[in-house]
Each structure stands twice: as C-alpha cells, then as structure tokens.
Amino acid sequence: MKKNILIILFGLMLTHGFAQSDIRLNNYWWKTSIINPASMDAEHLAEFDIAYRNQWTLFPGAPKTMYASGSYYIDDLHTKFGVKILKDQIGYTSSFDLDFIYSYATKISYYWRAQMGLALSYQNQSYDASKIITETITDPLLYERLLNENKFNSDVGFEFTNDVWLIGMSGQNIASLFRTEKTRFVNTNIIYAMYRKFDKPTVNLGYGVSAIQTKNLFQMEFNLTSYFKIDSRADALQFGLFYRTRNEMGVLFGANLGQNLHLYYNYDYNVGGISRSSIGSHELMLTYSLDKIEKCNCWY
Image (cartoon, rainbow, N blue to C red; front, side, top):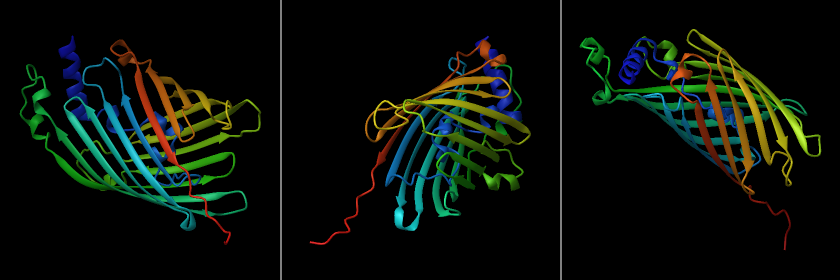
C-alpha cells in the first residue's frame, strides 16, 4: 500500500506539478509579508521570522517547508529592505527560493496608506533519484525530466491599509508566466482583505477573506479570529478558524511570549481523499521584532 502511494505521488508530481507547486504558508493570515513583498511593519525597526510546515502528516513523501525572513525599516524614507528564504521538500524534489525585497509606503489620504513592493528571486529545483521507487515505473523518459534547474523570478505587490483595514494584491513568480517548461515555482495571484478593530476592552474579532489563483486552480479562504487583551497589547493572545475551498479547514493560534517575541501555530485538515492517509498539517512560526531607536530632539 505504501509503495502504491509513493508511485501515485511520483506520477502526480510529473504530470501536474502536485498541489504543493504553490508553496504557501497558512501563517500569512498573521504576516502578509510571507506572500506579498509590499507588506511592512512600520512600527518596528527590524523584524525576523522563522517557520516550519509539516503538510499532510504521515503521508509518504509529503511536503515539508522551512521559511526564514528578515527586514529593516528606514523610517525617514518610508522604505523596507528585506530578504526571504524558502526551502521545500516533497518526495524526491527539493526547491529553494531566495528573495531580495524592496518596499515603499506613502500616504494617499488622512487615513489610508499605500505600500508597494518588489522581490527579485533566485530559485533552484533539484531531485534525489535514489528516493524514487521504480519497480513498476520503467519509462526512461520520466528521468529525463529530473534535471536540476536554476532560475530567476520576481514578485510584485500592493497593500492599502488604515487603522482597521488591510487590503492587498500580490503576484508571485511573474517570470513563470513567460516560460514554457514546467516548474514548481508557478505564477500565483492573491487578493485579500482583512478587518480588525480593537475597540473592546477584552476580546475583539477580526475577519479575513482571500482569493487565490494558481494556473487553473481557484480557491477562496475565509478567516475569523478572536483577539484577547491580556497585557498592554490588544492582540496578546489570538485564536482563529479558517476554511479553504473546497475541502480544507483549520485553526490558528497566536501568543505573545514577551515584549518583542510572538509565537504562531496553525493546524489544518484536508477532508478530501488524502485524509485517509494523513492526520492533517502543522505549521509553527516565531517572530522577533526590534523596537525603533528613540530620537532625542533636546539639547544640552
């Protein structure tokens, strides 16, 4: 049975690029910088994120994703510089993505701010043929497609934000639109809107919706999150639910571990056919922020 599952996985990856061809972390509900180069944290001097996702736990060859990012915000220039690293392993296929990010923010009205961002990417895709089970797959043409690839790509994005709304648009892997060969770094376009208002003394609600297009696959995601004010922060503790069309749902959890350290965790479960071989997906992220340096306007 396990052998059959691996053979099915092998065939799907060759013919369709598999569902994981769009490498995406659910924690973008907390940090849209994961999916959009325009996202920036103007409240802090710098921010560092690390994350790990174990998708479809117990499914042989299932995706495992590692993520790390760092950014530096220049207050006087309303500009962010950042770097992002994404490493993904699915079966015998490894993918690596290194992004260099620039984003700029400007006020468009008294309440609204626009943010624009661009990421330039170096991407590598490699294969470990020793992990392939070949007892029933003998076609040599299959292995001719297992060539290491190095590509350059780019992302572009916009965000519009005020005190309660965050509306964004992101185009990922733009250069892949003009390539004929198949790659795991496929073009993905995302539109999202998030609302949260901290006007209650203890518990506040936030809402979110996103639309995602990858090739001929279209998905919608819906999010409902509760924010609990335990210390001075209105979002010291968070708990949320999300549903992704057509067959995935999950929970999100966030906790403030200190003045500048935050922990995020989410679990999602696929109720489709893969549920017979998996107990769901787990994702963990840590975020550390550096406070801005106070400027002294006095003289001595």
